[in-house]
Image 1: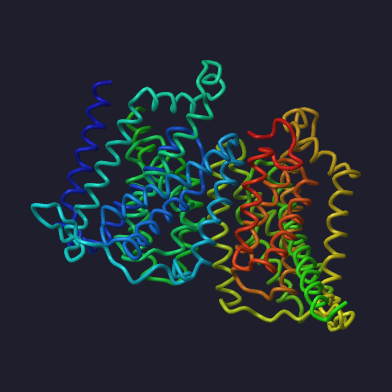
Image 2: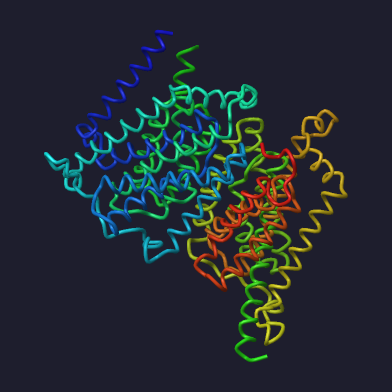
Length: 318
Length: 296
């Protein structure tokens, strides 16, 4: 028991150290700072999805919708309302979370494959809205003509627009706060109840737990964090893309979570790092990188269904 | 009737008819998806990829077999590919978390789309249907081309065929029984493995057929499947989970709805079907014709 505790602490320490020093070594290994930022942003999205997938046992394939709503919420705030980065993030999160609260209420009674199917289908509403509402969203070309704004803290100004590294640390700060909150929620009685529902929904129901309400809340929390990731993604690219809302993006979040290990809190971070780096590398080599992504999906499903951390943990316990 | 009024009526009629045709497509695809989902619990995300494959197979076969030969052969070829996929990939995942089969077919959809782009090119290719089928039948109803009527007729034949097979043949009865209780069916000595494979092939056959028909109307491009798969999901959800007549009804309904929306509010043509889905789920969580106890 203490051994396992030490091991997970060690893992967190190593991950934290790697993330904190990323800008120092990423160029040396052939990457660039924005790639590191992308890993952190998508890792946050995958971990947020895993809050629902891995810890509540509910299969959502439509998280890109809330990711994209966050992105458009942030971009449109800066472009049309006020040039403020914190306000953009706040509005992005509110928009994504509200949409999740409404749609969650419609679908919370479904389970399993049906839940997955409905979440995918609902995601398309936002895709078509962004795609068709040319005058506001830029349609197919995405939302351009804006960029992230320096943050005024009163005593100093953080120039996250001009300084890539500073923006990386800003994103990392948001990541740390968000994952810390998720970990706290999962340790609370509410979080334990979610795991109980995952393990045996019927038994949880018999114990008098209002299962549907719990799943709804878990869905909303998960989508809230995904919207935060979406706002950061838009700020990173200074651009919001309708493809960030589409179903293939949802599938990529799921594969990141599975590849890293769904049953572990940090697994999706590792999955996101592997996926983003591979995608960056392969898309620079060939135009057919989509097939490559497809092959990764199939190989992971057939040969690594427990993910990287799942394999490590099984080896450790054996 | 004044000329202006007449043209409005014509416009509405045109879009109603168009909507029903599109709805028939959705239904054909959704019925195949439903067959597979009901018996095997697999959401076949690659269904759109198989549809595209059917269309492209017909395109490549046409110089040799003509349109009619391609219409017969292309769906069968597509079904054969489907059977291979089931046998070597999907079969390994039965009994595991549905997450995995969903991810696998997701990856497969990427691969199929890329493969069609690689083999036949990213540009859309022309798809010639016989001249007999392309003439409008009357000048005032210019949209009633023979091809469209032919498509509707063929969809009706295919759907009646499907329901006949399910209702009358031993295979169909086993599929229906398996949908209700696969374990008991297996205990009774039915080769469930084989049944699932054939059923998968049957579903893919319908996708291939839809692909040939779609190619004749919309032209062929690698993304043709991706644009038709989401509405098929909606058709299944609206119609009712686990109910094939529901799926058929759902497909026609959303096709009609998007056809009519195209007249009055064109920019919402795609979004309307999701609005309908939201309303249906709010009032009937199981869908319009969904059965009791099939939410899980």
